[in-house]
Image (cartoon, rainbow, N blue to C red; front, top):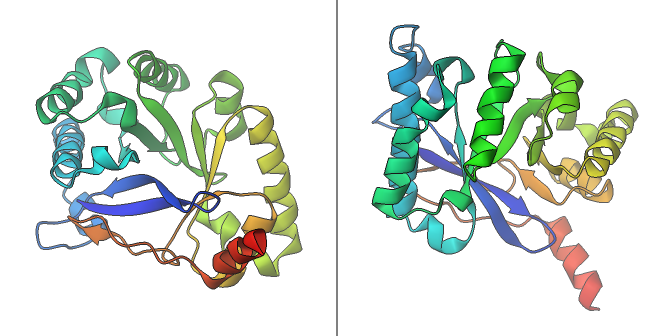
Length: 240
């Protein structure tokens, strides 16, 4: 596993660490997913959850107060209550707080809406937080939001890429932010790589961000966060 921070610009703290699957030699997720098929999908999903919690516990992530964001594959979940048992057992065994676990899924995976809603509702009842990744790029979108409001929505990187150079993207994101805020959903802008993207999103009111501008994923470690110059300027102006 590699861990990629989601930072809170306002507090200067790490909101969450997303666990990203890696090969044993540190190879990227693409090479790992090439080996995943229908026959081993369930076992792979379960192994990823267990490994993420074990590594996070070993790194004392629970003591930081930050969330652990675990990506899961909805199509690997045949029954929400049965498939969550290993996760609960691992959290109990390692002492990792269930309240600090957030389950994240991408809306680019085709899945039956009733089945997905059953999964998300079950996870919420068990005390887990839920998050939609890549919002704005997949199949679920607004229809899913009308049926279930997750705790967190992550704006797709294509919406944030070069947003400082696109008035169209700024208009779209501004209205998406307003909608999510009215629904009581926490917003994360992901894929932030440049100072311009950061500054533009900060001006639009986004507090939580994720991207290589702040840190690259740390292989089996919690990486140090690099706060961009624009953030320092903002903080200095507050105390001036």
